[in-house]
Amino acid sequence: MYEREAIERVLAELGDRAGCVSGNLLCQVACVKGIPSRDEIAGAPVCSGADGEALGKAFPALGYPEGELPAFVAAYACDEQQLRLIIEALDPELVVAVDQTAGRALAAAFKMPLLAAGAPRTHMGRRFLVVHDFQGSLASMETKRRAWAQLKAARRS
Image 1 (tube, rainbow, N blue to C red):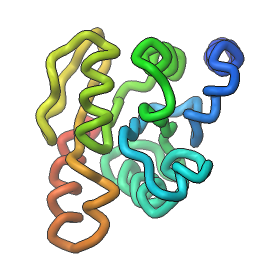
Image 2: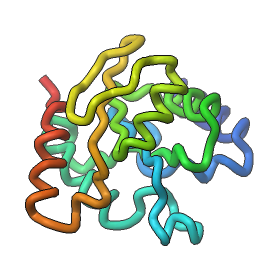
Image 3: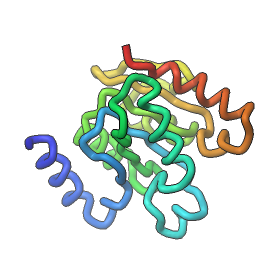
């Protein structure tokens, strides 16, 4: 119950920026997106398209609970302080930046060095991973394989 209350307080504090979070807010994985799609620019929730669907399918294959969608956070819709506040409130064990822009935003928000794509890092007790252009990777089988190889670095042990 404490987690839900903490998340509700953060969302209330964010006010009109609360829309920068969607998906399962009581999850073990948070996916952060730095470059919005056309639909997201027009107001759709973050990762509500094919990228969110593909991410939702990927994590059970990596050892995370079946049917548990990640939380999705729009780094493009919040500042560094808000991004950090959201991640801290969600308290996921893994934070995945789904593009390099999100990776830079997370590095700034958590005062850590930039992350290389596919190279997980533990910082302040939380694992972080950057996947290079996940949304763009859905365009071809070759780029999907590259994104999958990067995501596999997040495999749960």
